[in-house]
Length: 82
Image (cartoon, rainbow, N blue to C red; front, top):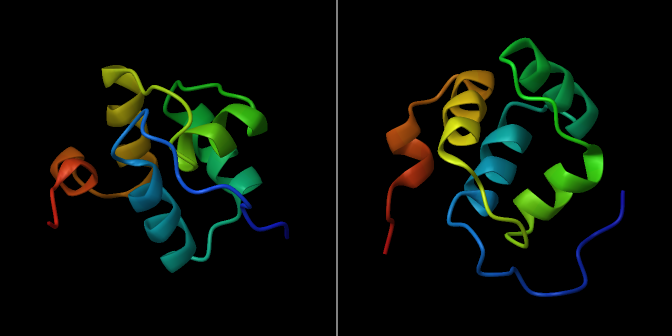
């Protein structure tokens, strides 16, 4: 597994939380992508990687599908821990 060399971007606020939740559930990216498809969201591995690295904007309907696929609330993805 390659680790990200650049610092996170600033295009979304859920990317790092998606990675943390996905890894806590021991879900690989390819398994997560398949799960997203079952909720109607078909994105490429590159697009998911960019989303998780916060280099890609996230649409509202994508946030809903991501929350369902991770079995968390939209609020949990969007919460501000600061």
